[in-house]
Amino acid sequence: MSNQSIRVRFAPSPTGPLHIGGVRTALYNYLFAKKLGGTFILRIEDTDSNRFVPGAEEYIIDSFKWCGLPFDEGVGIGGPYAPYRQSERKEIYKQYAQQLIREDKAYYAFDTPEELENLRKKLESEKASNTSYSYHVRKDMNNSLTLGMAASESMINEGIPYVIRIKMPENTIIEVNDIIRGKIEVNTSTLDDKVLWKSSDQLPTYHLANVTDDFLMKISHVIRGEEWLPSLPLHVLLYQYLGWQASMPQFAHLPLLLKPDGKGKLSKRDGDKMGFPVFPLEWIDPKTDEISMGYRESGYFPDALVNFLSFLGWNPGTEKELFSLNELIDAFSLEHVSKSGARFDFEKAKWFNHQYLMQKSPEEIGNIFMKINKEKLEAFPQDYIIKVCGLVKDRVSFVHEMWSQSYFFFEDPQQYDQELIKKKWKSDTNTLLSDAINVLDNISLFTAPAIHDALHEFCQQKNIGLGMVMIPLRLSLVGAGIGPDLPLILEMLGKQTVIKRIQKSINTIKSE
Ligand code: GLU
Image (cartoon, rainbow, N blue to C red; front, top):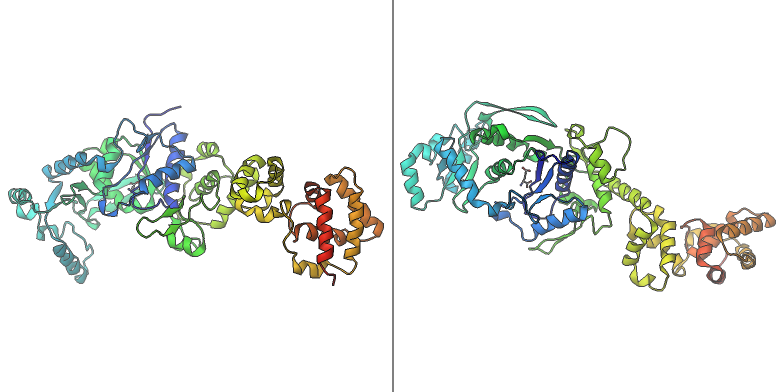
């Protein structure tokens, strides 16, 4: 059921690879929109030309393609409010900044970087409660409030650089409700006269562009990271000042993603240090060529990553943890998003991948496995490879770990686990294995149940424990104490290979 009034946007700045926290933010926007039949929009906020990084926008788009979270409207798709890239909307913003100047809600400021630096130093040395450019210092600075409008306009005409600053009211309470955090009240005396627009690049700052576009694009809910909470009073004031209060969106500020130890915000450095990715896809820095790991390249399934991320700040209120995307859409609500930061538990990410790996069909896993191990598997029939995948997929978290659990289905063991030999290869083991060869050779239909029965009978007749034969057998066939049920391994390898490998181990391994 579509609901045209529900419109949410993910609004990244293309300043580098998309942090995994950004993917979580977009996911919550997506789930919220889909649940209510609304529209999920991608807007690129690229007004800060100094921080623009080539390739970042494509990276963002590719990331969501891979995650399986398609946008309904926005950059790369189009829609009724195009363009969705802010650098292409330049002309739109200035008129609103000028409207604010006309209504005495903003002013021109000409202060040079040195003057601003001096102001900062002065306020810091005075230990002022508000150390920024705000109501208590604006009367001492170089702006249209002190110079007058006529003088200011002629300075502008002369080409003197300027910015437009909001005129923050003094000692006024701004009140706003956040869906996750409840009522928020801020006294404007603690806020500064933020820059809204700059003549140097003829571009708005984030605040003006963001609020203007949310209004013009009829955004109904702003769902974004907690780091934007300090900007909220300014944004609310902008809605009031621009006369857009009646269409102000509702706000929901999501909890931060915290480091694995819960102390502070999750950063790229944490991932590098502890060996886990903090980006959805691999990223190669265009300046330094430095490579950052991605979830995709690390072997994660996109649906497992999405399921994992959904739980970083939200829970369904039940014990259930495995959710398909459709189930997440049904279960999601902002009311169940927590206020406190979500600790990033990388082991849990692996756990989710393991669960998804187990759920996937041997065919699906087989296809990936064949791609990763193309050369080694060339000589084997597809059916055989898929069967192997079915046997070992429960033992790993990633498809790339499957070779180490299954190599013996494809090649003779290159070495034998010496520790295990020391413990389990007794003086009579070679004789036992020689006898076992005869037993196995006599099985006419070489299937796991027949092998199982024959080996059990053999141990009974010899009056020895099963392990006396099974462990050395495993060592002969696998080279180590790993792998699925032994009779299954024998069946898969076939009589000839089995006997050849046992014979080889008898010849190679010396008894204690
Ligand atoms: N461009 C901002 C960012 O990079 C958007 C914040 C918002 O959603 O308002 O995250």
